[in-house]
Image (cartoon, rainbow, N blue to C red; front, top):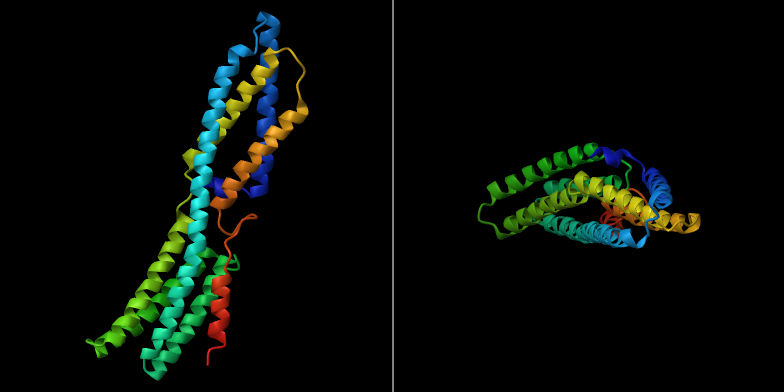
Length: 259
Protein backbone atom coordinates (compact mmCIF):
# COMPACT_ATOMS: atom_id res chain seq x y z
CA UNK A 1 0.00 0.00 0.00
CA UNK A 2 1.10 3.53 -0.77
CA UNK A 3 0.60 6.47 1.61
CA UNK A 4 -2.25 7.59 -0.65
CA UNK A 5 -4.18 4.40 0.24
CA UNK A 6 -4.30 5.43 3.89
CA UNK A 7 -6.33 8.54 3.07
CA UNK A 8 -10.11 7.88 3.23
CA UNK A 9 -11.94 8.35 -0.05
CA UNK A 10 -14.21 11.08 1.28
CA UNK A 11 -11.12 13.03 2.36
CA UNK A 12 -9.70 12.59 -1.15
CA UNK A 13 -12.87 14.05 -2.62
CA UNK A 14 -13.04 17.05 -0.24
CA UNK A 15 -9.34 17.85 -0.60
CA UNK A 16 -9.56 17.61 -4.39
CA UNK A 17 -12.50 20.05 -4.51
CA UNK A 18 -10.69 22.49 -2.22
CA UNK A 19 -7.48 22.19 -4.24
CA UNK A 20 -9.20 22.90 -7.56
CA UNK A 21 -11.22 25.82 -6.21
CA UNK A 22 -8.10 27.32 -4.65
CA UNK A 23 -6.13 26.97 -7.89
CA UNK A 24 -8.92 28.68 -9.83
CA UNK A 25 -9.06 31.58 -7.39
CA UNK A 26 -5.30 32.03 -7.26
CA UNK A 27 -5.12 31.95 -11.05
CA UNK A 28 -7.96 34.46 -11.35
CA UNK A 29 -6.19 36.88 -9.03
CA UNK A 30 -2.95 36.52 -10.98
CA UNK A 31 -4.80 37.12 -14.23
CA UNK A 32 -6.52 40.23 -12.89
CA UNK A 33 -3.20 41.69 -11.77
CA UNK A 34 -1.67 41.04 -15.18
CA UNK A 35 -4.67 42.56 -16.89
CA UNK A 36 -4.54 45.68 -14.69
CA UNK A 37 -0.83 46.11 -15.33
CA UNK A 38 -0.58 45.33 -19.04
CA UNK A 39 -4.11 45.01 -20.29
CA UNK A 40 -3.42 41.54 -21.73
CA UNK A 41 -6.33 39.89 -23.49
CA UNK A 42 -7.50 36.35 -22.48
CA UNK A 43 -7.09 35.11 -26.06
CA UNK A 44 -3.34 35.10 -25.49
CA UNK A 45 -3.60 32.25 -22.99
CA UNK A 46 -6.51 30.33 -24.52
CA UNK A 47 -4.31 28.06 -26.67
CA UNK A 48 -2.11 27.04 -23.74
CA UNK A 49 -5.16 26.44 -21.54
CA UNK A 50 -6.73 24.26 -24.22
CA UNK A 51 -3.56 22.20 -24.63
CA UNK A 52 -3.18 21.70 -20.87
CA UNK A 53 -6.81 20.72 -20.38
CA UNK A 54 -6.61 18.34 -23.34
CA UNK A 55 -3.58 16.65 -21.79
CA UNK A 56 -5.39 16.43 -18.44
CA UNK A 57 -8.44 14.88 -20.13
CA UNK A 58 -6.23 12.32 -21.84
CA UNK A 59 -4.52 11.37 -18.58
CA UNK A 60 -7.86 11.08 -16.77
CA UNK A 61 -9.35 8.91 -19.52
CA UNK A 62 -6.25 6.68 -19.66
CA UNK A 63 -6.15 6.17 -15.88
CA UNK A 64 -9.90 5.67 -15.57
CA UNK A 65 -9.88 3.07 -18.35
CA UNK A 66 -7.08 1.11 -16.66
CA UNK A 67 -8.83 1.18 -13.28
CA UNK A 68 -12.16 0.15 -14.84
CA UNK A 69 -10.48 -2.72 -16.72
CA UNK A 70 -8.99 -4.08 -13.51
CA UNK A 71 -12.39 -3.78 -11.83
CA UNK A 72 -14.00 -5.84 -14.59
CA UNK A 73 -11.20 -8.41 -14.32
CA UNK A 74 -11.80 -8.71 -10.58
CA UNK A 75 -15.48 -9.40 -11.26
CA UNK A 76 -14.65 -12.19 -13.69
CA UNK A 77 -12.08 -13.68 -11.32
CA UNK A 78 -14.72 -14.08 -8.59
CA UNK A 79 -16.69 -16.37 -10.92
CA UNK A 80 -13.53 -18.17 -12.00
CA UNK A 81 -12.52 -18.65 -8.37
CA UNK A 82 -15.93 -20.06 -7.43
CA UNK A 83 -15.82 -22.47 -10.39
CA UNK A 84 -12.31 -23.64 -9.47
CA UNK A 85 -13.31 -24.30 -5.85
CA UNK A 86 -16.46 -26.17 -6.87
CA UNK A 87 -14.48 -28.26 -9.35
CA UNK A 88 -12.05 -29.20 -6.58
CA UNK A 89 -14.98 -30.03 -4.29
CA UNK A 90 -16.50 -32.37 -6.88
CA UNK A 91 -13.22 -34.09 -7.67
CA UNK A 92 -12.58 -34.60 -3.96
CA UNK A 93 -15.00 -37.51 -4.38
CA UNK A 94 -12.03 -39.42 -5.80
CA UNK A 95 -10.47 -39.50 -2.32
CA UNK A 96 -11.06 -42.14 0.30
CA UNK A 97 -13.96 -41.33 2.69
CA UNK A 98 -11.83 -39.97 5.60
CA UNK A 99 -9.72 -37.82 3.29
CA UNK A 100 -12.76 -36.76 1.26
CA UNK A 101 -14.60 -35.53 4.34
CA UNK A 102 -11.56 -33.60 5.61
CA UNK A 103 -10.84 -32.10 2.19
CA UNK A 104 -14.39 -30.87 1.76
CA UNK A 105 -14.38 -29.46 5.27
CA UNK A 106 -11.27 -27.46 4.42
CA UNK A 107 -12.86 -26.27 1.18
CA UNK A 108 -15.88 -25.00 3.13
CA UNK A 109 -13.55 -23.19 5.52
CA UNK A 110 -11.66 -21.81 2.52
CA UNK A 111 -14.82 -20.34 0.96
CA UNK A 112 -15.84 -18.78 4.30
CA UNK A 113 -12.37 -17.28 4.60
CA UNK A 114 -12.48 -15.80 1.09
CA UNK A 115 -15.84 -14.15 1.75
CA UNK A 116 -14.68 -12.70 5.06
CA UNK A 117 -11.59 -11.22 3.40
CA UNK A 118 -13.63 -9.83 0.48
CA UNK A 119 -16.10 -8.21 2.87
CA UNK A 120 -13.31 -6.63 4.96
CA UNK A 121 -14.41 -8.70 7.97
CA UNK A 122 -10.86 -9.96 8.40
CA UNK A 123 -7.43 -8.43 8.05
CA UNK A 124 -6.04 -9.17 4.60
CA UNK A 125 -2.65 -10.37 5.85
CA UNK A 126 -4.32 -12.74 8.32
CA UNK A 127 -6.67 -14.02 5.62
CA UNK A 128 -3.77 -14.68 3.25
CA UNK A 129 -1.83 -16.47 5.98
CA UNK A 130 -4.80 -18.74 6.73
CA UNK A 131 -5.35 -19.36 3.02
CA UNK A 132 -1.71 -20.40 2.60
CA UNK A 133 -2.04 -22.74 5.57
CA UNK A 134 -5.13 -24.36 4.04
CA UNK A 135 -3.32 -24.66 0.73
CA UNK A 136 -0.47 -26.52 2.42
CA UNK A 137 -2.83 -28.98 4.10
CA UNK A 138 -4.82 -29.59 0.93
CA UNK A 139 -1.67 -30.11 -1.08
CA UNK A 140 -0.54 -32.73 1.42
CA UNK A 141 -3.72 -34.65 0.67
CA UNK A 142 -3.06 -34.30 -3.05
CA UNK A 143 0.53 -35.51 -2.64
CA UNK A 144 -0.59 -38.56 -0.66
CA UNK A 145 -3.16 -39.39 -3.32
CA UNK A 146 -0.61 -39.03 -6.11
CA UNK A 147 1.90 -41.27 -4.28
CA UNK A 148 -0.65 -43.97 -3.56
CA UNK A 149 -2.01 -43.95 -7.11
CA UNK A 150 0.83 -42.69 -9.36
CA UNK A 151 -0.87 -43.72 -12.59
CA UNK A 152 -4.44 -42.85 -11.62
CA UNK A 153 -6.36 -40.57 -13.95
CA UNK A 154 -8.73 -39.60 -11.12
CA UNK A 155 -5.81 -38.57 -8.93
CA UNK A 156 -4.44 -36.46 -11.76
CA UNK A 157 -7.80 -34.74 -12.26
CA UNK A 158 -8.04 -33.90 -8.56
CA UNK A 159 -4.49 -32.54 -8.41
CA UNK A 160 -5.15 -30.48 -11.53
CA UNK A 161 -8.30 -28.95 -10.02
CA UNK A 162 -6.54 -28.15 -6.75
CA UNK A 163 -3.61 -26.54 -8.55
CA UNK A 164 -5.98 -24.43 -10.65
CA UNK A 165 -7.78 -23.29 -7.50
CA UNK A 166 -4.51 -22.12 -5.96
CA UNK A 167 -3.50 -20.32 -9.15
CA UNK A 168 -6.84 -18.49 -9.23
CA UNK A 169 -6.32 -17.19 -5.72
CA UNK A 170 -2.94 -15.80 -6.74
CA UNK A 171 -4.58 -14.05 -9.69
CA UNK A 172 -7.23 -12.48 -7.45
CA UNK A 173 -4.70 -11.25 -4.91
CA UNK A 174 -2.32 -9.92 -7.57
CA UNK A 175 -4.89 -8.12 -9.70
CA UNK A 176 -7.15 -7.09 -6.84
CA UNK A 177 -4.67 -5.92 -4.26
CA UNK A 178 -1.18 -5.58 -5.71
CA UNK A 179 -1.66 -4.03 -9.15
CA UNK A 180 -2.71 -0.44 -8.50
CA UNK A 181 -2.46 2.99 -10.07
CA UNK A 182 1.19 3.96 -9.46
CA UNK A 183 1.89 6.85 -7.14
CA UNK A 184 3.75 8.73 -9.88
CA UNK A 185 0.57 8.75 -12.00
CA UNK A 186 -1.43 10.16 -9.09
CA UNK A 187 1.18 12.90 -8.64
CA UNK A 188 1.06 13.66 -12.39
CA UNK A 189 -2.75 13.78 -12.39
CA UNK A 190 -2.94 16.22 -9.50
CA UNK A 191 -0.07 18.32 -10.85
CA UNK A 192 -1.81 18.62 -14.24
CA UNK A 193 -5.10 19.41 -12.52
CA UNK A 194 -3.58 22.22 -10.46
CA UNK A 195 -1.66 23.64 -13.42
CA UNK A 196 -4.72 23.47 -15.65
CA UNK A 197 -6.94 25.17 -13.08
CA UNK A 198 -4.34 27.88 -12.49
CA UNK A 199 -4.13 28.59 -16.21
CA UNK A 200 -7.90 28.61 -16.56
CA UNK A 201 -8.19 31.03 -13.66
CA UNK A 202 -5.52 33.25 -15.22
CA UNK A 203 -7.42 33.26 -18.49
CA UNK A 204 -10.64 34.40 -16.82
CA UNK A 205 -8.72 37.02 -14.83
CA UNK A 206 -7.11 38.43 -17.98
CA UNK A 207 -10.60 39.28 -19.22
CA UNK A 208 -10.97 41.74 -16.39
CA UNK A 209 -14.38 40.38 -15.41
CA UNK A 210 -15.68 39.08 -12.12
CA UNK A 211 -15.00 35.56 -10.94
CA UNK A 212 -17.84 33.08 -11.59
CA UNK A 213 -17.95 31.12 -8.35
CA UNK A 214 -20.77 28.84 -9.49
CA UNK A 215 -19.02 27.74 -12.67
CA UNK A 216 -15.74 27.22 -10.85
CA UNK A 217 -17.41 25.09 -8.18
CA UNK A 218 -19.21 23.03 -10.84
CA UNK A 219 -15.91 22.38 -12.63
CA UNK A 220 -14.22 21.47 -9.34
CA UNK A 221 -17.00 19.01 -8.49
CA UNK A 222 -16.88 17.42 -11.96
CA UNK A 223 -13.12 16.84 -11.88
CA UNK A 224 -13.24 15.70 -8.26
CA UNK A 225 -15.92 13.12 -9.05
CA UNK A 226 -13.78 11.66 -11.83
CA UNK A 227 -10.69 11.49 -9.59
CA UNK A 228 -12.82 9.99 -6.79
CA UNK A 229 -14.14 7.27 -9.12
CA UNK A 230 -10.61 6.40 -10.24
CA UNK A 231 -9.50 6.06 -6.62
CA UNK A 232 -12.64 4.06 -5.78
CA UNK A 233 -12.10 1.62 -8.65
CA UNK A 234 -8.47 1.28 -7.61
CA UNK A 235 -9.31 0.32 -4.00
CA UNK A 236 -11.15 -3.02 -3.74
CA UNK A 237 -13.48 -3.25 -0.78
CA UNK A 238 -13.64 0.50 -0.17
CA UNK A 239 -15.97 3.24 -1.30
CA UNK A 240 -19.12 2.83 -3.35
CA UNK A 241 -17.87 0.61 -6.18
CA UNK A 242 -17.50 -2.95 -4.94
CA UNK A 243 -17.11 -6.28 -6.68
CA UNK A 244 -20.11 -8.56 -6.21
CA UNK A 245 -19.36 -11.78 -4.36
CA UNK A 246 -22.63 -13.40 -5.42
CA UNK A 247 -20.92 -16.38 -7.06
CA UNK A 248 -18.94 -17.14 -3.89
CA UNK A 249 -22.01 -16.62 -1.69
CA UNK A 250 -24.02 -19.08 -3.77
CA UNK A 251 -21.16 -21.57 -3.63
CA UNK A 252 -20.97 -21.20 0.15
CA UNK A 253 -24.67 -22.01 0.46
CA UNK A 254 -24.33 -24.95 -1.94
CA UNK A 255 -21.43 -26.49 -0.04
CA UNK A 256 -23.18 -25.99 3.30
CA UNK A 257 -26.23 -27.97 2.13
CA UNK A 258 -24.32 -30.65 0.24
CA UNK A 259 -25.35 -34.13 1.41
